[in-house]
Amino acid sequence: MWNDGDNAVGGWLSIPATLSAEVMARVGFDYVCVDTQHGAVEYQATVELIRAIEHGGSCPIVRVPWNEPGIIGKMLDAGAHGIIIPMVNTVAEAEAAVAACRYAPHGGSRSFGPTVVANRHDDYVTWARDHVAVIPMIETEQAVGNLTDILQVPGIDGVYVGPADLSLTLGLPPGNNDGEAAFDEAYATIVAECQKAGVAPGCHASAALVPKRFEQGFRMVTAIADQLALRDGANAALATARGEATGGEGGLY
Image 1 (cartoon, rainbow, N blue to C red):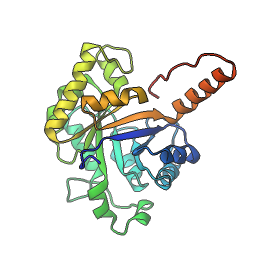
Image 2: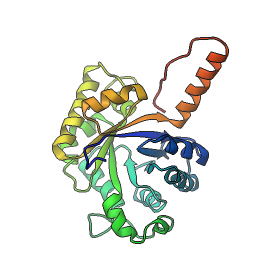
Image 3: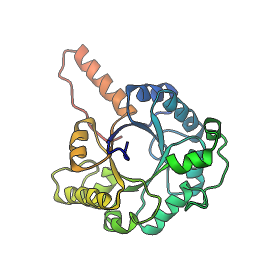
Image 4: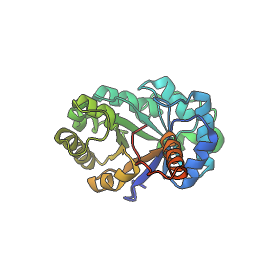
């Protein structure tokens, strides 16, 4: 989609339930991300969630807990098509993220042993070289300041903005702080630098914010998480049942 100039809308999984994963995938999101950093999802559940996402017809990606090669390799071996790596603030950290996702001699040091995912691809090494997306998170003021150099690291396909952590480092409350000069400037800088480097900028948002984020130049935007969808749907149903006004969507996770 990125190569064709299209934008991707995604869903987010924090609940370790294959039924939830398949439901999210079948809705039609372009990608569904399994959150193993802040969600309640462990490795064995991730293996099954990835399977359910693919069964539902979407693209499975995983946010790992940290920029650590062991867990990155395991999530790729489980079948993730892309990895979102938290808190990448420097060139060295970006290089480490790429190395963990790529095999030698193509800029990486990932260990070969795709026990699960090899069942789905006859030549997994070639498939991984062409399809695995490396997506460092840009979610601090430091990372924004280093972004020009970070984006020069070969092998980065996209970056993903965590608005809550970015806001905290800017002295703002966690969340989307549109209208705050520091927040707006950081977002504009991220998009502009990514466009110069030919890297896809992505971010965490809400359904209501997706059109605005695309207008700003983001190429992948997460619209909803399973936990929020469950909460908001239940709240709306209960309010309707009681004849009360329904509340709007809110939150990030």
